[in-house]
Image (cartoon, rainbow, N blue to C red; front, side, top):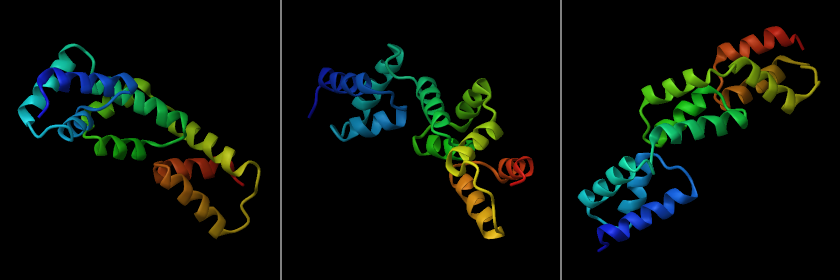
Length: 149
């Protein structure tokens, strides 16, 4: 069984590499010990010392996913998987205020360049690609109406 100091050291080792959500950190620490109270004590300490912050984690995740061309639905789903509150994600997205249509257009142009759409099935395929990347059908329709290709 790990002591408090050993668990704090393990938490700091994890957090030194990258940001973790509170949920992720809890899961990692519980894999090292079964004492839930001790894990909660370490997480509270990490948060009070500002080593762990869900706000920072969400900010990092949003910036990373925007840079990779993911849409709002994908970002919301990934944050939900990491145990982050929906309100926090919406707050951070509102602060970032990305132009989803511009991101979708940039992703579309990168993937399909200037290749014209020759059939309805080709258009559906391209739309599915954008939907799988987390863009809404409204973003897709807006893109195809301005694209006209």
